[in-house]
Length: 386
Image (cartoon, rainbow, N blue to C red; front, side, top):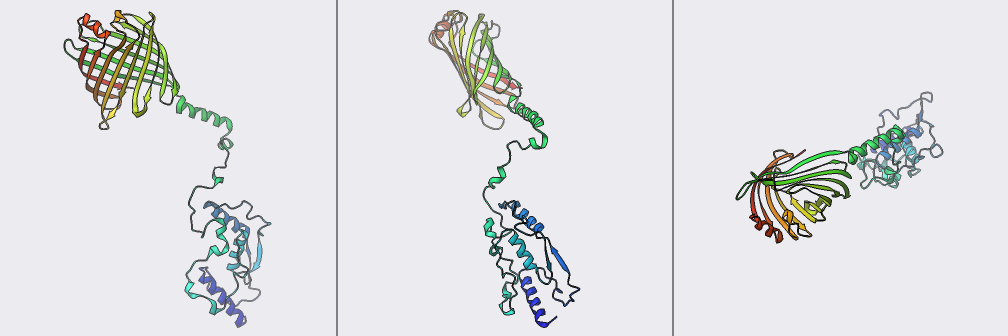
């Protein structure tokens, strides 16, 4: 091989080594024409691999970027005619990069900047900026491309079948909102120590149903030990969700003490802003008596298990009901404070204090029967649910 050809080859090899390309040491060794191998470079496959790598980084590479009409799939070149620089340039041109025609021209020894021997290849000069990044290693920031959410809304149908997925979605809806639940709570089961005869009280409630429709049941009663029960009632209600945290309830209430009486009931129950639990209802008896009751309570956590619960109840009446000692207007007011310890969330004993006042006409009825219209109860009780 002439000395000038060997010099050009060595200069080319040095230039590629300066760009970090692995050029074998014997690349420029003299060889006969018969020994020159023919090398096939599948530029289309390399183009597809390069395009897949860029898509993995979120770059918008057109699907036909490596189509045969844009990039020949196979280029037969002689190894001494197409250097690695030209092969790489061909791959980048196939992907639409702008690579100068003289990018792989041999450089004179004096033009070579040996100070940049370890510098990486400048991909920005090949047009990588058109894909939105300055180098191959840069990971773009920001939201994913719009194509990431462009699939069909029920893509699983194409894999598992529409019928199978319909059953799966039905089961999912059943388990997340349509499932029927039985819940029972003993809200107040307590012993009441007070002046005179000590007393007792129960207040239980529960439901069976789904998030939207439920059957509610409630029962309350109280009395003094050694005396007839002062009051006992049971309610059976249909409950319908009318807001995310409130149910409308309608049904009947049956009193067993102090007298038997039946009421129609309409009310609301739910969780008000600031986590106040509200239960309000109006009652219309079979004798035409209209009364109402409003209960509000709040669970205020002191620790994860110690809970302070303020509670208030107001009873109202539209008319006098002398047979049960109710005066028109404001009937009774109750205000209590209970402190419970939740050994488990479902089981919590408590202590507390509650004050009751009979007001106006109701207070007069109480005095006529020798009853004190104002009573203080020191309570010990149990709250549980399952």
